[in-house]
Length: 285
Image 1 (cartoon, rainbow, N blue to C red):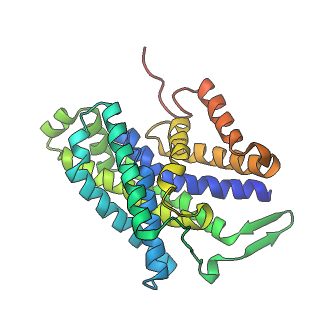
Image 2 (tube, rainbow, N blue to C red):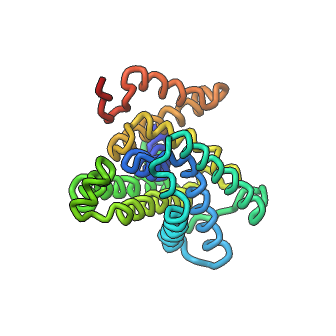
């Protein structure tokens, strides 16, 4: 039971980071492989606020998300929007270039070492139950992840902004004709995606570690979540993250000699039976 709970917590952290990629890739149809770089930025901002500015942990999290979103808006307005109509290959090459630039920048300012992070006392320790040890910080991740998933799902499917976003992606020209400011919608959506990345990066420092290779080390995991869950589907990203998190932790615990093989095997098996993802729509022929 402890392994399962740790897997759920790991999956929820994976969801918190990767759901921003699902937003930009699925809802905006932009292949942003630099998503891990924004998560890394949020992690470094969070660590800097905690270790050097003395900001409390719970205050540093939203500050890291907002600061990352502001950087995301700057990049969206100056760089990303020029490539909205480009091919996916151009988008991939552009975002990969940003990834390696971010790695060099992080190495220059912070060095190659792992960044230290000490959780506040109220998030340390465990709750010991018969047959189950619950880490308090992992429980915090689970609760926060569920709250964000519910909020995002309601925003996308049940608000005016969500309807405008779907219209802007499906037919930008018609959306403009209806009076929708498509550029503003895309900017806000990109800000949301990068804010979620920054929040997840700050939350993930304790479990994943933080060094300049973060931007490229975990991007495959984020892409797996989007592919398995279904691009642009919040519920799909959540379910896929939980499944992959449980199998990943269980595989590393019971068969550590094969490393991350289990999570890739699960991905391949799921995509064989559901090529469009768990909750994605099948492509029309």
